[in-house]
Length: 530
Image (cartoon, rainbow, N blue to C red; front, side, top):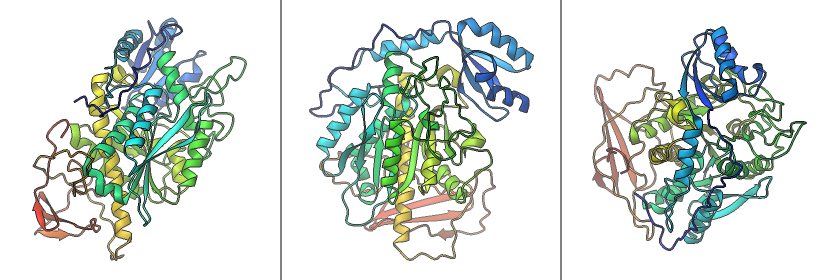
């Protein structure tokens, strides 16, 4: 449902420049299906081994997955012969990328005047106007700041959403837009801002945790992808080298294992790691921000597309994990379960290097290296179970709504985990009882959730009912525990005023909540929005 924001009247979105826009007519997307380790090695070097530039849209290092490459019209026969030599199966998933780009641009040129629709791809300027509006109207619990400026001097703004408190409050950081062509990422961040600042059900959560949202970390690249080249990925620093190439992959520019696997020293490469660690002003600003708040930040999510993944560190090398990897998997599975309850989309929780490919110098690895507990890269839809190549970065406008709704529930789930851990540390808890690592038990929920306006805030509900009414434990592949009689399991203490008891019986989980003594049925999500 398109919503109006009171007196907010946004200027019409800038009409995209027609002149100078890269023509993708005749470009094709090949979907490759590796079946051997040799195939994986070939794909890993595909953008460097053919003697011409080839954009690998999605690389993989796992047999049975699919990789997508963008092939220029003059090189189609060349790559077909090369794939045949390797006996590598492929499919022409998109016969004409230009047609898809043209359709998308027509939709972008027609925003509804006088409204701000959260399910729309907005320009950078309109994104910043929305942040200004929210900060001016929600002064009691929203503050705005700037982490730095881009190469072209665009401010990189953030919002801190959370009520003031004299006590220590942990924080979650949501960062989006580091890769310019992944338009769904800033859209998801803006939707998170909208929900957190207009739905009163989050009042109690925001009293116990601060949520920082940085909706567009690469504004120069984002605007360049809108006005000149839809599939532009990098920043816009430069030019560099004899070919005068622009930009750096911001997600390879951080100091943790800088310039290791999954990066390139070639300034023309889409994975160019930059002139040095934090050489890009955008990444230097993000680093300063994280270091300045590292004592409070307990969670970090970098929003990307595509694939439907929740990826945890380390990403610089395969089969390399942090000491608390079990905690990361546990929380990641909780997030994936929250995502699935919205529209049934299944996200995979896996190590970024093992599940996709090594990528050194990434944001999530850097955040983890400075002490942030829960750090993830969230790759939004389409997922591997869908036709990735036909949608990919150019997710159709009609899919913005389900994509951002489900992603937001995963974000809030991590915020709840962080909040609950903080509450647990403030209360005496038996140290002899480790966190259980059992399979996810999905209990059916029932009931209807009511949305409440944020002003005035009257809600005493500490949690939007669509998220986290099930218990996440051990890996999802493990068998369910055998229980011979009903048992009561005590979890981390809930927030003040809320009692939450989980009663397990064979093949069934019952969740009961009460607030101030009144028992409430556990709500459910039907389909779509609640």
